[in-house]
Amino acid sequence: MTENEIAKVVVDRALYIHQGLGPGLLESVYEAVLADDLQRRGLQVERQKSIPIIFEDRHFDEGFRADLLVENKVIIELKSVEQLARVHKKQVLTYLRLSGNKLGLLINFGGELLRGNIHRLVNGLPE
Image (cartoon, rainbow, N blue to C red; front, side, top):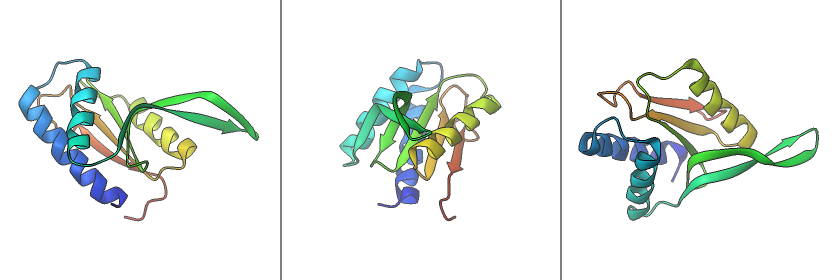
């Protein structure tokens, strides 16, 4: 599957989950449910995937943890807040740059509606 095909499945399933559970739960709940749902659809999903940092030819294991890494291609950062801050998008873009991945989704389950709370962020991925 391509990054865009993976993203379509993730967005569809996130919408379904948000409709079923609603807003207001902890981020970890949405993470567990979405990961399970994607895995049941045959996708490889890693939760809290540690991504090391390489800086000045030095390797640091204390990099960051991606909430979800799907098919080793798409980083999913989940939030459960009333409103996203600009720093959340910057966080995902930095994760993409440092990991070498090309597509990230920032999904905020905290809003009344999920539409408008899903952001597609790219790092060199052709549109």
